[in-house]
Length: 411
Image (tube, rainbow, N blue to C red):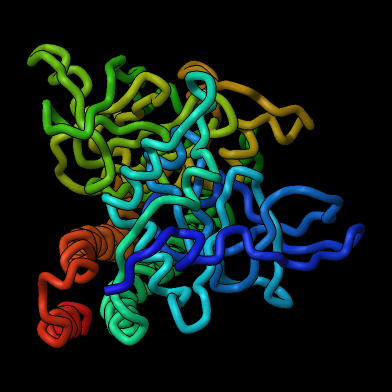
């Protein structure tokens, strides 16, 4: 084992040369997902000065509350020309040649003990606390030698690679489901040979009707409570727990709630929840499994009034570009800072007959169910990673045995 300060063993905020006035990939704090390894830039910005600067493979470690506590740490991927910049609230960490490697540095920084130590170094006013850099650099850590680091990183990388593969597969499955939705209910592809009639939304198949969303769903605002990492009650779903319409229940906290309120706010399979405030307005979560959970007050739950309305249809409607543009006011060129339940359900849609709705539900069911299965597998993979990580770092478990076990569950 090697013992030393963080600044002796890891390069913190290493120098990266960027040209002023040039555009580079930019990574903001909000696109970093908690405890999810890769982060890819979604935009380019002109570099003027300041901000964190990094290269491909560096680790971005959130230093500000609550991002640090929430697990916002990631390894940078997909940088054009291998350079980029981002939020000032990142520490950029990189391996030192012959001492540490980049893969190991990432895994070290998601270890609970490492993070708890960093949290104790926070200074500043409540709500805007940051890890003090100088104290952080002086922290003493103990790590395996470079050869063992490579082996440990390879084992853990196998788990994270499988998680990323599942997430990419889910994106493809979601796109396939949305393509079917648009073909059926926007382009009316399967029904083009039938008779069409005029409506306030244009020409629609005969027998279909124009309704407001409020005619076919009920709404309810969420529950107000404090979240807890301890299992004091059911899961407590918040806006921040929804990533790309998916929910990793392993990372969702808990809350205390009495039986009456639990029955009022309990999430059921098929429920759709929509964020109603701030920059997250319009974020949609789909409950496509049976869970012991309630939802927070900044979310609005939508439930079909009858079984004739497919829950898959409702979900795909709410994530469609047409509905999202309506909700965010994009059509009028304005941006809404919030959306209440009334606004959410004034949206008008074309409702097909029950048999068409049933056929569509069956058509996309296997796609959405596979997404749920992949999410469940990711939960297992994440639990395994979090279980073996501290044991690998401390040398508590044999590397060859851990490698064999990981290979078995990722094949």
